[in-house]
Length: 94
Image (cartoon, rainbow, N blue to C red; front, side, top):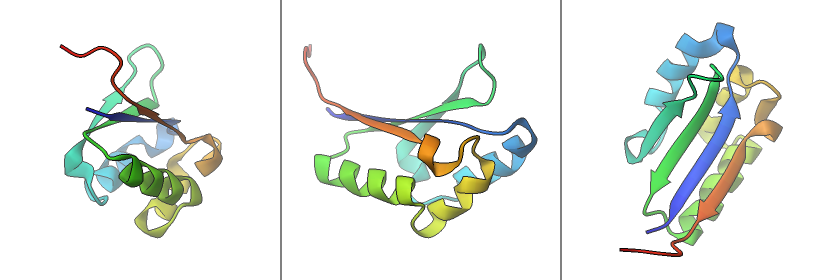
């Protein structure tokens, strides 16, 4: 099972608007969203069972701000350039 992590930091003043936005984004029901209690405003999305092709499409659309994702730029410290996206594949299972 592949996992995709998407990590970024949201401005404190944008938190409410960001959460409203993310709930309405394409595919939001397929991901889990976490915020660090040690670093408020630092978010990680976890997407499970994503194919490598879907990962590449997600990464390109998120980092270029395609479609709805373009609106996210205003919430992010450092803008879209600071969105980090990684694909992880299983090493040990079971």
